[in-house]
Each structure stands twice: as C-alpha cells, then as structure tokens.
Length: 180
Image (tube, rainbow, N blue to C red):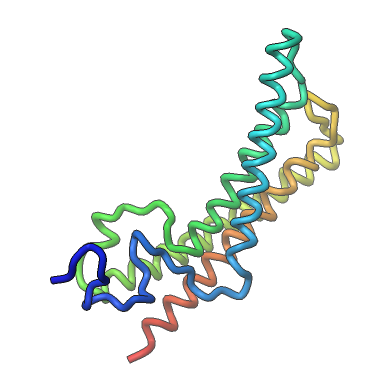
C-alpha cells in the first residue's frame, strides 16, 4: 500500500486521475477553449463590477450591461461545454456510464459521443435559420440597438465547435478500442 505522499504503484504517474486530469492530444489545442473561458469570465466580472459601482455612486444602471452579460454567459456556457466534451467531463449518468464491463463502458462512450455530434450539428443547422431571420428582418437588440445577428451568430459557430470536439472524441475512442 502506498502512503499519501508517494504515488500508487498501480497507477502510471502520467495517468489521468480526478486529482491530476491530463488532456488528450487534440488537433486544436484545448487552450483555445481555456483562454476563451478566461476572457469571457473576466469581461463578465468587469462589466458586472462596473455596473455595481455605477449604481452605488449614481443610482443609475448601464443599460448595455445586461445585454452583454447575457451574451457572455451564453458564450461562456458553449465554450466551456466544448472543453468539457473534449476532456470527457460532460454531464452523464455515471451509474450507467461507469457500470459494467470495459467493453460496455467503451460502447456507451462511443454512443454518447456520436449522440453529441448529432445533437450539436442539428443545433448548428437550426440556429443558422434563426441567425438568417435576424439578419433578413433586421432585428435589433433591445438595449443598444445593435443588429441581433451579431449576438446570435455565435450559437451555430460554437455548436459546430462542440460537434467537432465530440467527433474528435468519438474518433479517439474508436481508435483506442481497435487496439489490441
């Protein structure tokens, strides 16, 4: 048995554990999502803090902060979802996903990855129609009067990014399962 300070002999020192997650090799580095998450969170915090300060000193609120905050929260959610899919940290029912034989777990992981690919491709395709409607009918945002498609264009783009990350995950799982 190993002590808490020395690594277990049963686990390779480079193996991923809950305490030491290791990113898989991906074509597009996961740092892209990490930095987009950091930037979105920082902007969200700055905008919200600025609005709180303005309300405290002037009893007035910046009208544009709510609009940008909602946009940044949506971007943050989709970017973080992309990273979660690539890292295999997405939401799943672990009772089913982690139970059974290794073959069953592998097949469930393959099925889950392909289901995500199809879901987010469908979401990307359907949201393109929404963006097109925003563009054609010249809808404007309620707070700033900006074209609404400036905000909505990111939904199909980021949905496609999630679908591609899920497809990459599917291919890595498929290749890993084909090895002896």
